[in-house]
Length: 621
Image (cartoon, rainbow, N blue to C red):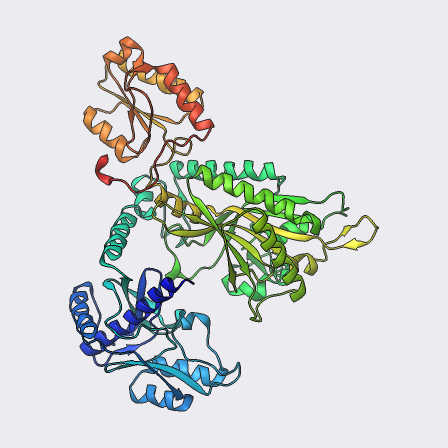
């Protein structure tokens, strides 16, 4: 982390303490959970008993924070023995701090999510805690390991903007606290830009656009987290998955199919049950005693297809792909539009390779992902997700080290813009995570390539080597889109619902000026001609005014609108109204219908991008 980033993180962490100081001044009985620095700002989890903080309170909290800042209070660090720290928490009526301290005393550590990057004390070793770290500013003292700025006057610009509920330690069985969020930046200009971006993000919210553009819906009768895609939304899904299929086929993958349910024992054998058993849906059979589950991932199934017959070194790589629907029993409070669902469609792929084939296969996948995200106008960064020293990984550590070195060299050879991230590996092997950057500058982990030495070993997968001995293949997990639902939640916001011509569920809207037979017949013939070319057109012959028809097409974000009247019928030409984000060269003269339709069809087939995905004036249309 650069010095500038370290300072900004210290500012945001200090602002969390300043906010807690202000809340304590206003509500002396406040009880505090954790309050870390996060991307763009900070938050603090607060328990006010029967009282609640609302948006109307932000102003007075900010005013109190400004008093603390103007007082220029120094941040003073000091240590206390663990027992004295527990006594402090009890005497100051801070039960959440007491719980964390008792965990530290008993276990010598606490979970990473409780630390939130900056919140708890320092352990002297893994089994015993002697002292813990505190910071004090003015009348406020907090259990904290820092870092902080020197004093409260050195924190930059800030603003409170959100209050939300949060279960203590993320556990639904524990008390629900109020999580108060603030934004923090070094300058007022940066803060103002953040809130402009926040407003833009609200306008682009995929849940809002999904409803407005009729892409997907949810039903209480179907169940939470189980999206239903409309015809328009299904077009998006199928086109994106077809593109992924083509790219993966070009890499050498072949399509397979596996069932939606399976025996629990499959996942016990693979190692997934031990790690993710509480996230699986259980299925009860009325015919057998088999314990069944809804499929949460496809890799063990693909391993069984590989194991169905003997393999030779000449057969490898063996590469399977499947657009698999899988199911995860996500917590209700974590469900969010399409970004977190219980029914997930993955463009899931697995390659079984010799060690000397890893570089070739992974390079192919990297090139496929770069092509896909280039077409989608999203730049890519890369995380090399490696193991940490935690005891949560399976397999031989030496094999891990070798694999990580291979991925590192491969990333360098492909000139990837990569960062090594310790502790983010899958439990079965290291991976390359593809980080897509959207039009608002937000980063999303979508595509991935993962090496797996564990499942081939657990399932006893082998191939006959050139010398006649049995050797174990390496399994490579691949996804280009990842979850199509989550990808769509990102992509809809990336383009603000203005899909490029090849993806637009409706590419052309044909609107008649009146109901004259010649006009309706010409418009109908035009639509039929376009559909024969593979285009997606809709005909609007309603009794609404032309202005309303044009406006309806604009609201639906249709790329091209053709208004058909007597003039168009007589000339056999059209003058397309073009969506504002689409950049088209040339004049605005009317053009032959046949030429226009063939041009649009060619653009769609070639996935030509004429759209501008970056923030623009939402009032242009």
